[in-house]
Amino acid sequence: MGAPKQKWTQEEEAALKAGVVKHGAGKWRTILKDPEFSTVLYLRSNVDLKDKWRNMSVMANGWGSRDKARVALKRIHQVPKQDENATASASVAVQSDEETVDAMPAEISADMQQTLQISGPKRCTSLVNNHVLESVCATVIAIHACRLDNLIMEAIAGLKEPGGSNKTTIGTYIEEQFWAPPDFKRLLSAKLKTLTANGKLIKFAIAVWQGAVVGGACY
Amino acid sequence: MGAPKQKWTQEEEAALKAGVVKHGAGKWRTILKDPEFSTVLYLRSNVDLKDKWRNMSVMANGWGSRDKARVALKRIHQVPKQDENATASASVAVQSDEETVDAMPAEISADMQQTLQISGPKRCTSLVNNHVLESVCATVIAIHACRLDNLIMEAIAGLKEPGGSNKTTIGTYIEEQFWAPPDFKRLLSAKLKTLTANGKLIKFAIAVWQGAVVGGACY
DNA sequence: CGTTAGGGGTAGGGTTGG
DNA sequence: TCCAACCCTACCCCTAAC
Image (cartoon, rainbow over all chains, first blue to last red; front, side, top):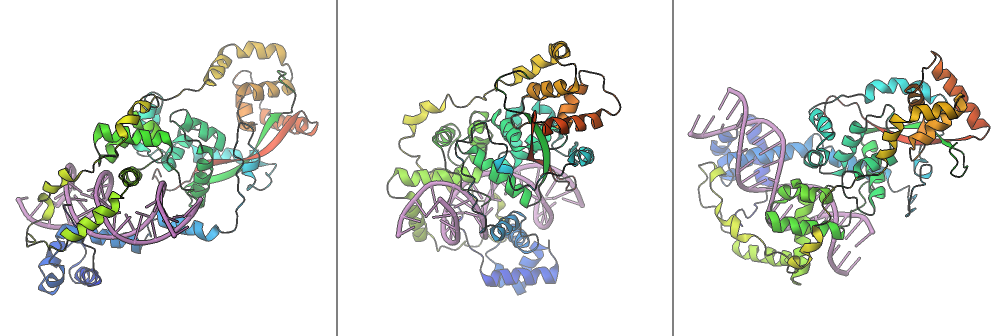
């Protein structure tokens, strides 16, 4: 193929770091021309230096936020194993998968109000998305949100439910616009868990009421 | 763990094949954005598509073209970039890219047909209910539900929320159709409590999610 | 023009979990 | 053990800005 993929050697990385120390980050061409480094970096272009520095920086400081979450999860993991199998998760559900939530505080409804502001818009660039949602929805979402993470965020934002949205609602919202794989519910559960773990979502316990048994009677 | 390894479904594989036929192998992002496939492949990233295509190709020609490619490269490799270093490497390239496109898995054209049906979005029926409620609702409810008890039952039944309805939603539902006294919220809370106490309602704790604050950034 | 920043994309080698 | 799914990294492309 065009580029046989030259893995960066330790010497090259060292030279790049030294070059940045000497000339500053961003002075790629300058570093390349410096005889002190050109003997090591002669195979690289200024763009290569820029890209490599970008990669190195990602690893160094932020840990790439994605990896951080994954690692954090790995630590926490190990313990649970609470399956959650319950394959035919038909329409019942509701109670069991939310067992992680502590007994609901009776006065929740009190705090409910304050959540109103947070959950409100906060739109950013995606404002457009939410408007278009009304009409062209499927296409637009497909463009801006290719992965489940984004879909969940879009769903919650689009649903605009004052207190937040529960798993069933989020799932239905997504399924209305896309084909859903058989294990979608499980996937969604897992995603919600990780998004909560890495701080992208906040999980609340709220109280809901259901009519007591009573067959089909209309109250 | 967070990401439970999403196995590829038949629908997804079919969509991928169709996408490759339409846009070509290597046009992963393009395939992903195509509304014809995005409804099926929305859970996948362009990299996922690439990886899956690689795996499928491996399976197709028994030999694992992946390994074959690697071996072939090792032979050709070694030739160092002869000079060209002085100029930006940006504009060169181009030549060898096109002819290297992998032969697609052999049986593709066979399964092509089945991919056609799966694309469109699928609407849910439940929307109807909510619309009807908007119009006829008020009258009907007024007849059958004179007391708050009944109103609450009507609200919960009318809302038809899969997991049950929370207080805010119930309250809003009622307020939309009737004048509400200033202390309505308090009243509602009390009623919900007694209805729960005497077994007419069942109270659950469920989890809901909200977007995390996070300065402006939308995920 | 040339260079850089930065977003985005693809290929291919490597890793890992089921 | 094996391999499908996934991750990591190198390279490429583009555009805006200077």
